Length: 239
Image 1 (cartoon, one colour):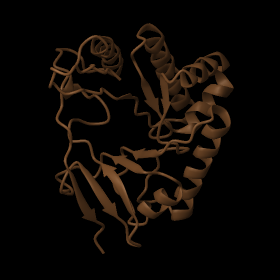
Image 2: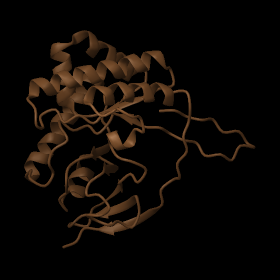
Image 3: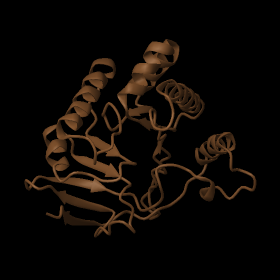
């Protein structure tokens, strides 16, 4: 996260660049491959954090931390140190980012409870902002689950605008029981970087994307970008 300090005569906006890594640890590959990807990604994040003192990294999904704790204790120790320093932010707080359409309510509750238990036990933190970037839909009962679990905000990317128009990027979602939760669907980009987002000829392979992504992260650490603050509105789940 890059922060630009404002002075009394500086009316330029403060820009926060929120860095995270979206990993589908058990989607279209084995869990062993997902674990390797998680370890590699977290190594890169820890290296960047130790190189750039103003950089902050965010990640959720306690299952990835469990795999790292078991398979790479040295990396896990680095992460715990960075979390304690406020450099690595435990976000989301769930065991896994699930398919919220297919999962039963009990399953979603268990995913929340297990993630919160692990992060509390291992890091002494309880995230208050939940997110599921890539699930294709969300049940109308989710605001109630989030509120009862202590969350004050929820972030999602799907459904995308052409699938569902919302009144604003930042809005109040009212569930079927009347429970409301503040929700953000980012309108300044996506949860990941794809080939179309990188205007570099020849950058198409997964390795090239990863390499170029790290390069961009390093460059971003020393320069800022601007974005406009979202407006707020309300939206109620359809019956």
